[in-house]
Structures are given as C-alpha cells and as structure tokens.
Amino acid sequence: MENIEKFLSKMSDLVWGVPLIVLLVGTGIYLTFRLGLLQIRSLPYALKLAFSRNQDKTSEGDISHFQALMTASAATVGTGNIVGVATAVVLGGPGAVLWMWLAGLFGMATKYGEAILAVKYRVKDPEGNMAGGPMYYLEHGLKQKWLGVLFAIFGALAAFGIGNGTQAKAVADLMNDTFSIPFWVTGLALVIFAGLVIIGGIKWIGRVTAFFVPIMAVFYILAGLIVMIININLVPEAIATIFSYAFSGEAALGGTVGAVIRFGVARGLFSNEAGMGSAPIAAAAAKTDLPGRQALVSMVQVLIDTLIICSITGITIVMSGQWQDKSIQAGVLTSSAFETLIGGAGPYLITIGLLFFASSTILGWGYYGEKCFQYLFKHPIAVRGYRLVFVLFIFVGATATLDVVWSLADVLNGLMAIPNLIGLLGLSGVIIYETKRLQKKVEEEKEEATKNTVKGA
Image (cartoon, rainbow, N blue to C red; front, side):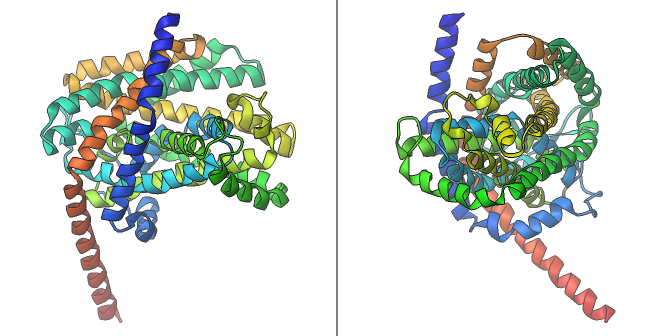
C-alpha cells in the first residue's frame, strides 16, 4: 500500500504539474480574448439572469437558471474554499491569493464556454431528463466518442473522492475536534441527508441547493466580512502584502515567483473547477432558450466561488499573520486565523461553514458522478445503483482513512480536465457562434422593449 501511495503521489504531481496548469489557464486566456472580455462586459446581464425571479419556464430543461447555478455552486463551494486556500498560502505565500484571483477571472471565460457546449449538445435520457456535459460535446460536437468515454470514466470514479469521501472526512474530523461528535454519527447523518436528496434526482437536488447554497454562502461571507470590519485596520496591510508577495516569491516554498504562481493558480482552479468539465453537467439541465444565456449564469459561479468566498478566506489568513507560523497545518490554518482575529468563536464559525460547504459538495458531485455513469451505462437501474453506492460510500469516507482512494481521486480529477480542454479548444468556434447568436437575440429584445415602452407612453 505504501508503494501504491508513493506511485499515486507522483502521478498526482505529474497530472497537476505545470503543463496542465498552463493548459487550464491558457484556455481561459484564449477564450477571454476571443470573446472580447465577455466576463467583464456581460457580468451585469449575467447577474440579472442568474438572480431574476422571472426564470425561463417554457424552454426545454429540468431546472431553472438559478437552480443550475446553485447545483454547480454546491459542488464547487467546498473544502477547497477553506482548506484549499489555506494550502495555497502555506505553500505559495500570501502572493498566491493574487494568482488565485487571476485564475478565477480567466476561469470565468472557461466556465462560460463549457456551459455553452453542454447546453448545445445535451440530449434526453431514457427517463426524459436532460443529460449533457463534456462526454456529450466530445461525442456529438468534436466527434471523438472515445474522449467522451474517458471523461465519463474519470468523472464517475473521481466523484467518490473529491465529491464524497474527502468531504465527509473533513466534516467528520472537524465535528469530532470541535464538538467531540463520533465519526460514525457524522457519517450516518450525512448519509441520511444526502440520500434523501440524491435519490430524488436533479429536480430535487436543484430545489434543495437553491434553498441551501445561498444560506451557506451568505453565512460564510457575512462571517468573513464581520471579521474584516472588526479588524478593519489590518485589511489594507493584508491586501498590500498579497500584491507585494505575488511577485517577490518570499515565504513561498522554494522562494521563487514560480512557486507562488503555481500554488495560487492550481488551488484557484481546483476550487472553482473551471476547465475540469464538472459544472457544465449541471448547466445542461437548465431551462433555457439559448445556450449562451445559461452559459452567462454558469460564469457567475466562479465569481461567487473564487472572487468572493476564496478571497474572504485568503485575506483573513493574511490579516491574522498565522501563515507565518510554519507549525500550523493548512487544514486548521483558516480556523486558527479566525480565532486569532475574533477569539474563541472563530473555530466554531469555520466548523459550521465547512459543514455547509462539504455537505453541499456531496450533493452536487452525486449528480455529476451519476451523469458520467449514465453515459457509460444507459439503463435506469444501473444509474439508481450508482446513486445507492455513492450515498453509502459517504459513511465509509467519514469513518475510515483511505489515503490511497483520495490520492487516486486527485489523479482522476486532474485527468478529467484533459479531454474537456481538448473539446473546448476544438469547439471554440461553436462557442463564438453561439455567443454572437445570443448577442443578436439580446439586441432584438432591447429594441422590442423600447418599442413597447414608446407605445405605452
């Protein structure tokens, strides 16, 4: 087992090395400029679509724009926002936070492109629900089914690690450390909660996440803002430190700017999953008349995940100065930072936040894994079997130490990105075409609204 663990560790370093990071960021930069900085100029309209009460109810799809956004956010807003950011600061220093922001900015374009293709090439499954994602646009758009099969295999298996076991373990550890709750009790509670939701399929997942995710996001954002307001005098210095260390390489392992960039970008991408191909699976289920509309909504998820939630964690850690204490492990650094800034209530806030984040991630990834499995094995009974095994594995994750499983999932998670990025680059022309189609439609709607206003007057 020790040899297997060493092999998987080397594989993880290889998969998540510089080439993949360059490919992930490069794809985001390429799409950003081909789309004319769409993530900046179209953000107001994207926010309006995402949070509008007048959701599209007539177009094909299973859930609303907002529910699709919340399902994707549920999957991505997880331990990476707390532990992942802390790891980036420990390994890359405060400057890693700036590179995390840049990864998020370009990642918005990647997420937009993924969602367009997911809706464009989605199909109906045997039960009449929408099915889409990289496996479908690789098969039907790029005409490379073998790449779709590879992605589906990686996704179906990786879901048990990144979206299941690691999340359950993180919650069980914190609940035990903070409240002395036995691991098996936490595991059983998570199984019951996730089982009741996941067994109901995407429509039930969409309803629950639409209620659950805004609450958890607002809770953590408000907690972070309160900490910053209480310590407002430390905020300017913390931001200045982030910018200063981003180019100096100080306090980073290896002491180089390259290390700062690598860990900041890698953890930013790991947190928001832009380019991984997971979030477009949720986007494909949305009710929308044009692929571009849901793509804009999906883009907002990166804004919420990286540019808001991860920023709060990163700035708070730098404010506290705890990142300079090399004896503090990344897993407890955020908790230690909050405790330093506001006292004993800090660890409890982080525990509650992580409980929300990790629980929601299990829901989102349960759907992702199921859809990947459905692509490989079409029969509804096989899909229900996958749901059951996924839910039961939560208990295993919460109560057992399975380092080999987690390492394998980390490798598979990185491998998911490779076929997906090939699809994004190969189908970039389709992304541009659908964007122009959306822009034309929006202009027509504006003209129609102006005419109606004039007639009304």
